[in-house]
Image (cartoon, rainbow, N blue to C red; front, side, top):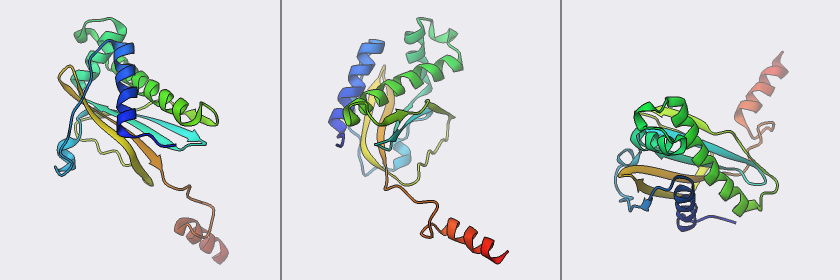
Length: 177
């Protein structure tokens, strides 16, 4: 089973409004524009699905939006929110989206979610080798950008085989000893 951008947006919208009570809207992005212009600066949260399905959910959002999400979730004024609370709040939303995707893709069987991973900064470039984009949605909430992507792991690589150059080189070196 695959998930398309429309279904991904439906899951995002449902989680965003049910959990936070905030409005989220899908925005169109010129796909011919420079990819760097489409990146969202601030926080990137990742949750991986391992098992029957090997996918990664990423949620990128601005610092302003991340702070707003944490303020709503922790029922505190934005200026009193700590960076740990921001990480926890957006990580939880990303985890909820991943959990909904897991249920839809696998009926919840044979798949585990990782703990949310967080990257914070102004010039982050996340590279997940051997994956491809299954679905991606550009959104806005509270006037701030957000991007959610579902990445699918390419065919499982065999690291313990002669097809893997690194493994083959180590085996060759071991034979020389």
